[in-house]
Every structure is written in structure tokens, then in C-alpha cells.
Image (cartoon, rainbow, N blue to C red; front, side):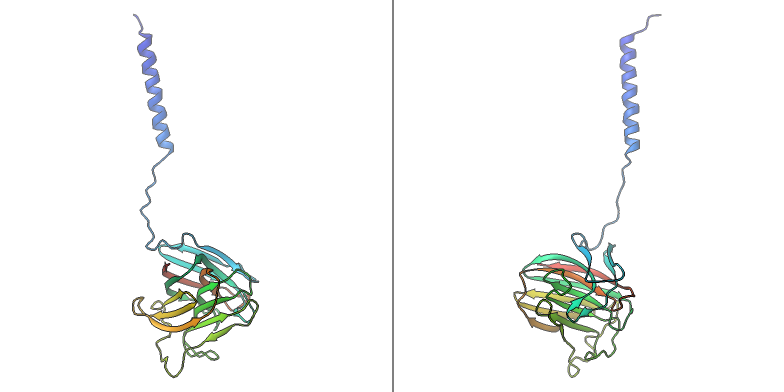
Length: 239
């Protein structure tokens, strides 16, 4: 019996190639990703604690939401302590989000949009915020507030709802609470909405800030030993 060594050799090489190919595909399974975020806004955000905090904060994005946890004594006075989830934006912007929930770690727990000159604890900045509930707080009889520090290391001040005209239009009613912060040159406007479509102007404030700002979501528990959580959805930035 004569053996065709050339045919045997070709058959052996072909068989080895087929086995190698099948093994290669077996070791590299195709993974199908059927999940797509409704709002692809978390990409590109940075997240960090600002100032002195006893417990580290965090920010995560999942299924169209951004959830932030934070400690921190406050965002007020001459220095701040909070968690910041932000992007660097140059020039005008218009940022909005639905506030799904804010835990009431403290009566003065604060969550909202911040536009900040730098990441130092005493930085010049603007902060349009909501509280966990709508109850009387010092000069505030509503659920939101516009705060600002005009100079680095200076004392913060605030714009409160006008008790004579505000009524209940600036109350919080999570998850039916949307907030918005808009910059046009040196003019910063804040808005509130109950549906994300019909916006009510809360404040218009003119201040000279750097062209490039760190803009995003800020949260402080207002309790240096406590942790607060805030959930945001539909975060959108227009430039």
C-alpha cells in the first residue's frame, strides 16, 4: 500500500489550522452590549472631594442617571467641603437636570449646579441649589437658593425666594423637580421647573468670572460626620 505523503501532509496542516481557528474563536467570545444610556452625559465628567471632608464622596453614572454621595460641613462662609462632579467649560453654557432625590442628612443638605473658578476650598463660584425639603430655613422660605462667592476667600452670600411674590413656584417635589443654570457672558441665570419644559426664572446675576469654569453637580451633607446622596437624571449641557 502506497501512502501519499504530500496529501497526508496537506490534510494534517489543514486539520491543525481548523482546530487552531476554532480554538481561537472559542477563546474570544463575541459579547453583545444591548445596554445604551439614555443620556450619554456622564462620560467626560471628573469627580472629586473639594475641601476637608471626613468621609470620601463618590459619583457614578448608570442608565441615564448620576448619583453622588458626599460628606462635608457646608458650602458657605469662606471655605467649602463637598463632592464635585464636573466638566471644564469655556464660554457660555446652559446646563439642566432632573433632581430625582436628595437625602435629608441635615436640614441644610445642599445639591445642585456649581460653576467654579478652581478646586481650592475657598474658590470664587456660583451655586444654584435645592434643599431636601421645602421648609423655612433662616431667610429662605422655599426649596432652592442661589449662592455666590465673589472673591477668593471671601464670604458667601445668597439670593433667597421673595416671600411676597414666590409663592410655591420654587418648592421642591422630587422627582418632579428640574433645575437649570445658564451663562451668557457675565450674566448667570437660574431656573426651576416641575416638568423640564416650562421654566420659571429664579434669579439673574451679573458677575465677572473667568471664561473657563468648572461646571457640574455639587453635593454637601452639611454634616461632617454624615453622608448624603443625591440622584440626578437627564443631565444636559448646551454650549
